[in-house]
Image (cartoon, rainbow, N blue to C red):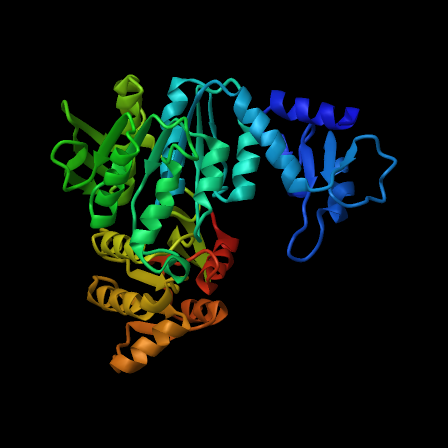
Length: 461
């Protein structure tokens, strides 16, 4: 191992938040990893990274800046990242929490990061860094002095979780839920449950001490059987069917942004006011309460922050923006779409209170990777949306078009297109001041691109 390689490894292990893979994100003292992208190699941006203040550069290709003493060429950049990540994890002495599940992973991670910050230094993966590369970066970027380090773990195919599990080696695992997602590869929700269970399998994760599990469907209950088989020390359950674990006893909506909540725990009831009426966010906060209880933290620190919970980009964030010189409110749920999250959003918007001069407009993109059941899932969403109390419905995608044609359903409040520009033109022609628009879609859909167009004129969050 050469001297430069030693210096970079030591630097990354001793410091936090230094790994960057986008030259635009580089700040003074960062380490730029020049990765191969879909269109070009990161070597193209080494100059930009250095001018932005990069302390070191790591690449797996020859660079025309080879005379620079701070550029390290390695044989395999992913092997190098994994080596550093493993060493960093071995040095970390705090509590490691990993979150997986079909939906809600990022939201729970952000909630834990927000609430646990009252307890000391917290490290958490950024954005949705939940695949192999994202986990490697998150491991290297964690603060070695953190009390808790929180990771998000995702998968879209078999045998991915065990690899991430053996890297992160979490002490505490949270499985948010098991719902139909990525069925194109997994085929069944039972297969999803089995794949997620590798995060608590001692074969891959000998550090496992506790697991927090939902219990709202058969696949989630099956996870509890697996946890028992693995003899996990602490198995904690939550959900509306839970008699002995944690559950939401009561939600009293005060308005769109305020609710009185009552949680039932194994030992007591917790009552508080919170700055949301979105049920899935309230359920996410219940998971935070479980983490507080398990780690013997002061619940008052949690209660002190419930009136200021964070909204997350692409997951329910509110914006004021202008469409054709008319100010409207945009609720951005454009990052993720599954049958369960679609249903939750439609129910939320159905109950959303509006003023007399306001209309509700919902824009729905296609749900991706649902396999053979895709058409039926979309058909269920069409019926649910039509029954909802909304003034205008805009469907985007080929599957929706097939369903609407088969149903021969025509209504002046329903519009369909396969193009985000056509939706924008439609809004320009039909929007009224103070309209409220909820957009729900998958990250890679045309509707997600529409949100980017709509937010060009945003005023505030």
